[in-house]
Length: 468
Image (tube, rainbow, N blue to C red; front, side):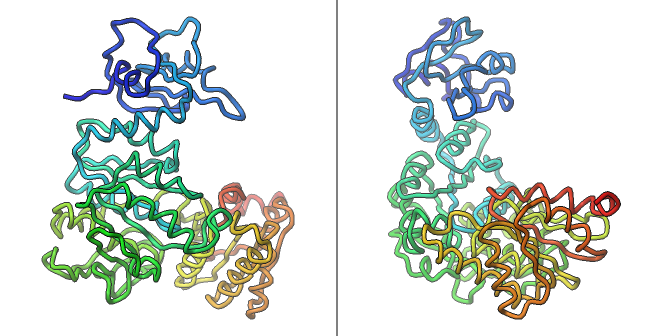
């Protein structure tokens, strides 16, 4: 039976093994780049970054139980085996591709401009009703995170769900060369990383690089609600999903039940499920859930799950922090969606907020890296403001250089209560004054705006009222 060992690591990447012969065949299970994340049996990847150098923490990694380290230089007095290579970040890609090739299990790759993390969680939850599933954790969806995820594959896993995020041309090719997905799911194409990719067709071209790395027997699951994806020829068996009537798997009769859950019917037109229509209820907030869940149902059907198992999987779904995560903070509803933002995802968040029967407060920040053309970026922010007004958002509070255009768009479309704050501290001091009992409060901005620091201010606003 295949086991990853220091000997195999050195052979596959052409590295130099340093250590005792007794440790050559020590089993390696998983990998980590941060010594604080090391678990017994892990391979610790030493990466020299701008702020620190992983080589300084080799001792800590061995104390935590690392089976081996991957380094770019000799480590004096190392307390365990290590392999020296010219570039650790490149070597782990080679190693991850080899490691993945040793497992004959279905691997599902997921990408898209919006909703890929939610889709990943939905697919993993559904497949988890029948299989032991490895899934991407946290934000490990890039050229460093994907290999770390793949290196976590063990003989106990029966399926893998890998999120694949990119920001430029060529990245998807490098990811797909490691993942080699058997099923590739694409959510909607949106205005993300337009600065690097140019336009929506550029985004499409970059993300569809993955198809060159799939077997002829591979299957594409594409958002049929997206015009570019609906007409794209994958060269593979293709299944469409979404809300529109012509999709192979679709959701109908969607009912958002406050913030507690969303209910809808899954309808299958392909004849791969019996019955072809069945009700689903997912304990999650947001209209986007219904649009993405059919992709998970499609993946489940392709991997021989029954309707009962698919329903069971949906019941097990748990939203993750920062992605439309809802909590009751005292006497308000707090919607934490501050992990990332682009025009498509912000509109989806505002649409979901508008469905709630209460006073609706949106705290929005800049959508970063939309375009090198400042006017184009400003226009996109302006459109978000107009959309917020059209959605009936009652109060709009903004912070960021470009978010002032969100305020302008909101007022231009007839919105009555909007304010832009040049300094985050002023916004933080204003929040306790503006939020009232019974409000639903959405917090959303690009990750680089660090809007997560607003969450404790909102949660403790009564205390802040007494001190501000």
